[in-house]
Length: 228
Image (cartoon, rainbow, N blue to C red; front, side, top):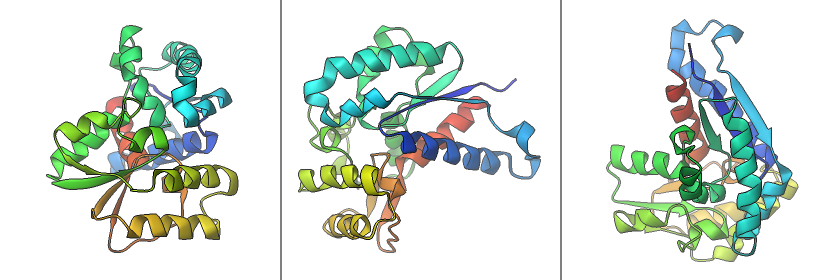
């Protein structure tokens, strides 16, 4: 019997929908010609908690966010075998998840990004995400990557952070959002760029000379593999 998948979302809710859609796509790609329709789709539980939006200002809301997230994790873990958090920033709480003995069910963005770097033998890559992520300090889930890999981050943290707010408010197809993102990407030296915020893959930017790597897609693929 296939394992059940869980998605915790709310920061923002569209990110959870995006992850779910990508799980359905990866499921079809995994099964190929064996996919017959509804009965071959994965069992997915989605728990959307709006209060997780406090993670955008994580430094001042760290304990409050963990309390909200912990309740969501305990709730969804009763119903699923594996779960992911549709927010790169919230993946920082991996150690806390381990302390409540549910780490074995948790698929983190850190793990899928590290696996991609190793599997593709990347010497250098850029990580673009919300302020707590790209500052690469104690509130970044990806900070340990700098010990092993050459990791670039955008120079203007605040512009990237504001862009994420703009995606939440105006959507990824807004003209200004697309242009602002293009300016950020054009200034990066790396060819391989991890979109390490669930809002960024929603931006309808076509970029021929850069490899924009959707961390949400990597997460979806891993969850589907785990479900089998």
